Image (cartoon, rainbow, N blue to C red):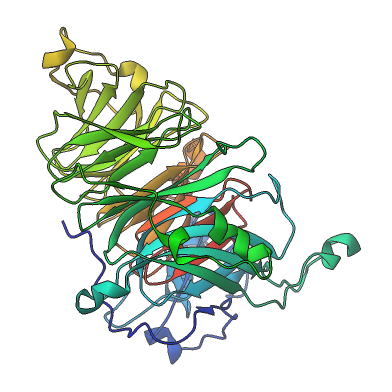
Length: 503
């Protein structure tokens, strides 16, 4: 499958600019050919504009008349101007969708000179659980410049600020909240660039205690590139420059503090261990090889040249266990997920599980319920697995492919899954990005009772667990913000920052 965005014709010239929130639009029959809105199918707020007839006045039994009215109401919903019903409506060629601002608490778009395949959110010192607007967040991303301008590729350390909430006519905020809520603010994107001269396939961030106790923590990035090299940068001075006027980032500070050259092919698997504060990094490539790089006590970096081997296809994603310091899992184009122990002398997987008949592109290990693992595949399916059901075969070195049953399995998307992530504090909520230009939010705790089943019987292929659909062109990766409850950031042709009223 293709991992790259379509090459942009953007020249990359001109200043960075922040996007704005979409304004509410009046939609008539003329504009329906060009746009639509999506509705939450389960809101049950649709009303027919037909005159209400009192029961029995037309001489028919109430049940017959009410059934006909319900059918007419459904037709009115389908044919209403500007309304797109997930699972029921279809876009005609040339039609596009516009978001319904009333379904968002926050929605912004921000543009960069070139699209970004991957990014990560940086934890900051502004506090956890914050709900004050306008919001601020810090991210880092790698660009994909036009193939004729590879030298323009860069890492972008970014600060998003002025992220205001959606203005509402019925807003009843307290005076104290209003003082902190500038709804008229425009979003601002500030950026510090690090030349890298290669497309970034995936980038991940790690906060590490400083080797000098008198100094604050440092922020490290690991970047897997098309060049096969993996670069580790210290972006601490770049972040400091946003909030310390007069701070200058030197050319020396733009250079990587380590370059990993163990890989002979490019790759997409990279993850920092959450249980090794100094820094322990996994990287996996298209040859199916996985390497471990560790930061030594003296601050240097050592890559173990003995690769972990077992996959018969490329390593598409990789993650450390949230609770076991020596355990990690990898997902591959060979359709399997394999679980490994870095202490193994054989460098072979402890167990192998076939989770798909096609490429397994992405995975996410729940931080709240650590026996749950979510995977997303090339056929648009994603699933949740209970790791307690994965049993190693006799003799870990010759582990066979087990075939357990997922505890949840969804085939809503019709294109490849490009990103998946558990909510950081709610183990029933999952965000999924796919090649059909959508980010979907799911609540695995939702179950249909008999009455709800009847109400949604006419909606095909829409699972009741589907909470929300956010449309974004060429979306590649999505992350929850760990310190702003319910806020998400997604990258595609542009960056989208949003928070729905449903999560």
